Image (cartoon, rainbow, N blue to C red):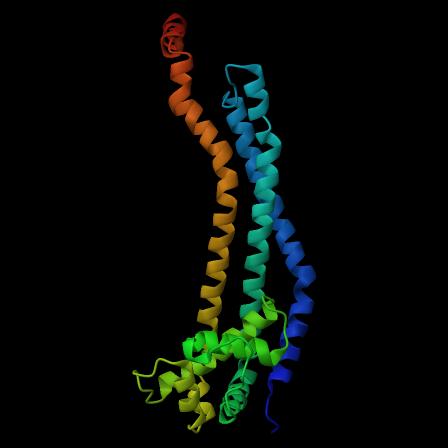
Length: 259
């Protein structure tokens, strides 16, 4: 059986990425419309309870911009989360489908450690962690665009392979430099039995990777939501009673008359 090389794995990854673009766009639109519809329903409920009524007509008019602002914002939030969720689902599906290829590929990839550590311009391997070294080598050797999904996935695969074999071997814990780890791996003999848990470890890493993406999306959109939510809370919790202090008394009298 011929070795399963990085070029072979890249073909599988790129075919997968190209095949899911339309699917991801559709998933993003679906969750975008769901987010927009939920926000519209909430706005209608608040509007019926006079939640957007303000003491001045101009203030009221500005606040009612939320009827456009929030649905659009929720659409883009849902679209972004849908894209991330869809990408995660497809990536995990790819891991399950390619599990049988990852083990022979891992053995082929580890064989590359028998060669001298490549010199990458502007990179000092002595100051890098193992993850940083793997990321630099993957970017340098694959020719992929920095930040692309293909590069991120290939880097996670390489990290999983190295971490799995180090966990299986008597790895000296005193070794901290990535150069020392590289030389340690270059002197070892590897078997496919050492790599059977790579797909499981890779799936865990992919989960953490996309969890960070989810947090980034939420934190990115949070300031845009704080503008209308902050104004709403500020008016109803603080300013409303100060601007019209007789409002609670008038409401009590009205209630008494009706009773």
